[in-house]
Length: 207
Image 1 (cartoon, helix red, strand yellow):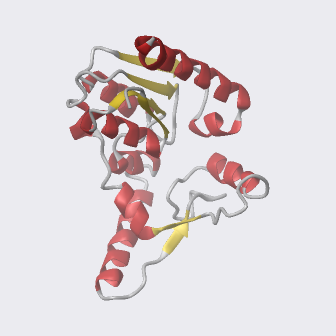
Image 2 (cartoon, helix red, strand yellow):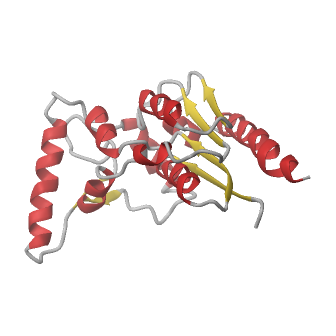
Image 3 (tube, one colour):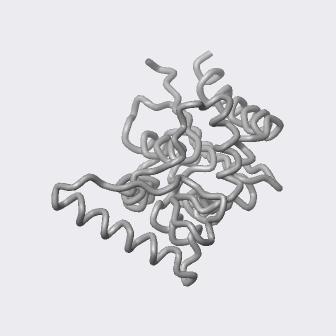
């Protein structure tokens, strides 16, 4: 009970930050390439001013009204091979290629789609109000330089607002968000940084 740590990556990286803020049982938290603000992430990755973000918002509005009237909500692709012309949640060809590949191997149940409602909920997600509540819990935020999915400038800004003095910003240069999922060498580098932090604040702290 005295050695509970939380670890998350991407969306669940944001969850790790929230848990560090609200659950005093958490003694150590690691947030790898975390989602910080879903709305800002969607606005940035869909290219505000290019029309894609406005089209996504219209689709969400229409789906919400349809569900309000008792009809089933719709779906959009999770990602796309042609994100410039097809509305999807994460408009990255690299994401499409990765998930298409793993769906044939280690993730056979992957459907390649998102409910429009879940995309709307993503746009309502933010860790920002929780960061100032992380006073004592050691937190490591690991980012990849140039993260295109969960914009790394949002991550760096969020790190600065974590109140804890026992925090660490770790970075992996010349990498991508999907690269941390797809490339074992990047996974090993990230895992080593995570493990060092866990040993310092969760293992050796209790020895």
